[in-house]
Length: 230
Image (cartoon, rainbow, N blue to C red; front, side, top):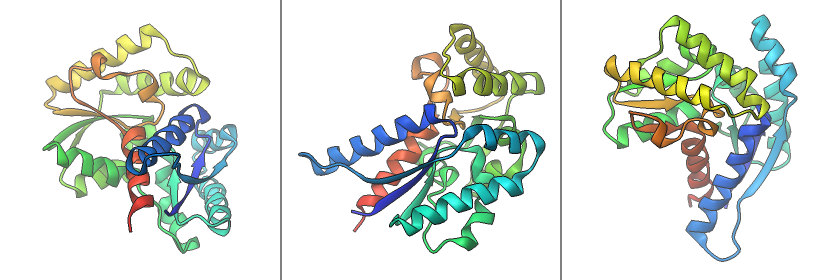
C-alpha cells in the first residue's frame, strides 16, 4: 500500500471526510482491520484565505509547496490537496516535488465521463467558477462547463466562506443552492459538480434536480484507489 500525503485544513471541516472516505475505501477493498497509510499536513486556513483575497497566489504556492515537500520527506508517495481552489497553484508546486499530485479536476472529469456526462454545471468558490485553472482541465477532458450567473456566483461563494468553512449548515442556503442548480439545468447542464470540498456538507443528492458529483468523495476515492494500485 502506498502512503498518501494529505494537505488539509482548507477548511478542516472538509478534510475530515477525506480521512473517513479514504479509510472506508481501503477497508472495503482489503477487509478486516486494514486502514490507509496517511500523513496529514493541515495548514492555517486564515493565512491561505488572506492570500486568496489579496491575489497573492505566489505566497499560497509557497505555503502549499512547503507542506508538500514536508509530506514527501515524511514518506508520502502521492500528494492529495484536500480542496479544489488551491489546485490553482499545482503548476508552481510540481517542480519542487519528486512525487505526483493526484489532481482533483482530473478525477472529477473521469467520474463525469464514466457516467456519460458531456456538459456539467460547476459550483465552487468564485475563483474556481470564474478562472480557467480548473474549468480548462475539465474542458481538456471533453466536458463542457457552465457556471452560475454573476449574482449567484456571489451567493455560492459567500455561503462557502461565511457558513460552510465555519461549520454552519443552513436550510436557507441549501434552498438557494437548489434554486441555482435548477437554473443551471435549464442552461443545459446534465450534472452538477460540487467543486468546493465543503459544498458536499450542504447539498445532498435529494437537494438537486441534477445528478451530483461531489469532488470530495470522488477525489478521496481516487486517492484510495491509487494507494492500492500494484
